Image (cartoon, rainbow, N blue to C red; front, side):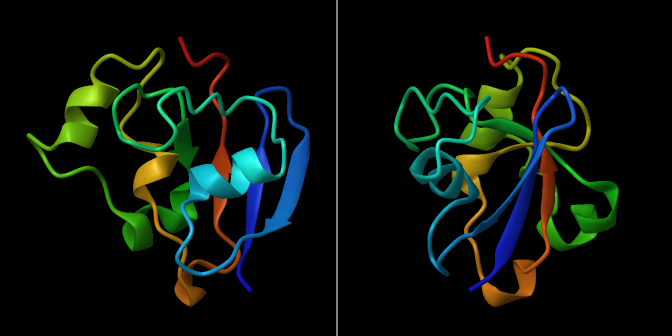
Length: 108
C-alpha cells in the first residue's frame, strides 16, 4: 500500500498508508489529518482539500488542466501557488508511494 506524507503548515508530519484507488484527500480525512477540511466530501466543489505537491513529485502528479473544475476551484483557494492541487483530485496508485504534500496555513 502506498505511503503518503502529509506535512501540516507548522511542520508536523503524518506518514499514512493510503489504499490504491482512494484520493489523497480521503487518506487524510480517514486518518484525521488536521488541515484538510474536505467540506464537499471530495466532489471538487470547495477547494478545502488544497495541498502543495512537493517539488520532487510535481512532474509525476502534474498540474490541474487549464479550464478544468479543479483549476477553477483553486482560483478561489486561499494561498494558491503553482504547485497547488486539490487532494480530492489525486487518486493514489502504486507509483505515488512516497508522495509528499504540504498543507497551507488555512483552507478558507
